[in-house]
Image (cartoon, rainbow, N blue to C red):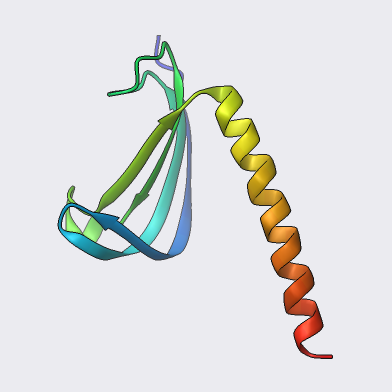
Length: 90
């Protein structure tokens, strides 16, 4: 069963694929059957630049539990970065 759980956001940064570094313009987060991970379902995170074609893609397929831990770590890193940025003007 396909879940149709898909979120797309604009992203600015860079990713590295077989062809080298490329500009990332969006991120796609979904929950569905993975293509490579040996899991029933997975959270898939793709950092892409559609204008550069299918080679401009960095993807991971992780368990739901791993995704939750990743989201928590990302939130902590963002909070720490925001605190540091807030102190720069002082």
